[in-house]
Image (cartoon, rainbow, N blue to C red; front, side):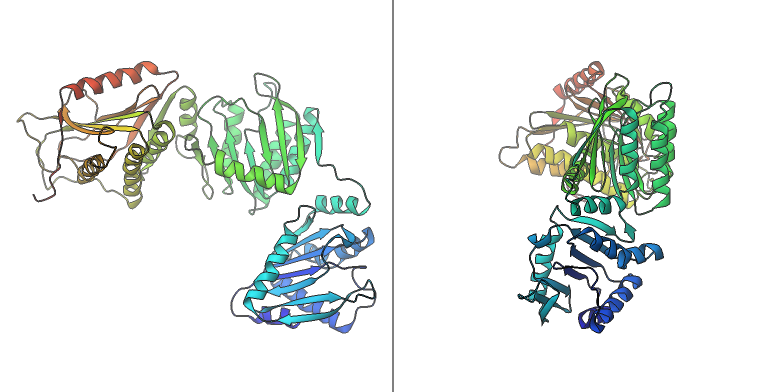
Length: 544
């Protein structure tokens, strides 16, 4: 009790861990005064919801589970309290270690030992106020907590009914069903809805679409997803969708976009892979059986560790893929402007990116495309055109936000990094001017700095042949373009007017397949300009 009191009064936020590994009966049939005081102090902490508390129980039988549920977890759930409290329980009898611990970071630890002459409550204990030993107790506790045979029956105010039932079956000696076969549409969507209802970390990879005439099971499942996001803001949904957007799919994505706790991204191409729904403790894999991508069958794997592995794979591999098209970010409400059109355009091999908010969206997207497509054996061919209009100090320059500058710098760094990784990076500055000269300030400072970085990198061993910088003649009525031969072409949509240095406001991206012809055409233009261009060996420093 003293440990809990000191933890509650401690000026620095702490964490409390408790174990009850030797419990012949829960709670004791004849509670002693110290035990009652301990429970009162613990409930005070749990109701205040300021200190995270984790408790592990090792229950011997089903009646003990019932009595446990009637105590702290049940009372807190009814009160709507306990949002810092987690309870795991085991049905393993004598199979767990028998040294109990109670510890609070920054306070100390108590090790409790049983009476060897009776199978009863702990008879003796040792209190140690030492940070290193306390951390050792936490490591011991965490090893028990991560044991996959434990059941998380209370999770921050939520009594997990399914985990309780699974623990109850284990106490009865019944084998838990780890894999369940879903052999019809009704079972598939019923299981999907159940996973959504009991999960706070939901990941969905193109869970499917309804049949052309509508599915009696599909729409109720989707309504459950929307309701779950609305009812509990702790829920976080990340969903990947295919670019084949029907009117019903557009309507559903628009509904999801109204939930700030949902994030959406789209695949820029055909998706013909199993649909996956990942919850807190389960993974549902649904199989397509028609060209329309309808889902009819699947399996559910019920294992917390496997669900965690799938979630990590989803977040670090699928969700992080730079080729995905963002549709909506967490914390935002509504779809990103033009997001669905970009997704559908990417499916046709064309993508339009506009920087409506002037926050560097074009630079960001172009960098993502280059990072994804340009490999060690590829070429990156860039051409930028400049008119030689006289500079004027009183002409306005557009405002550049800090975010815009950061995205631009990241784009130029990515080009240099690709050269370091083995790609060939070649750039041409093309000029058109009536008097044979280019006005000072016509080429912006950030571009000159990048050119200096190119020449500096070119001087490094092994990179001379991978980097080239030339000065050529304007031959095309486009501001600039970039080509990755046989893969993609990116055409800038902005065009500076006179002495106004315009921001990059848009780009049009062609992918191969299917647009090999325009990609090859721009590559031929670049090479024809380069053939008569002069190499640049030095960029003067400012003021020189």
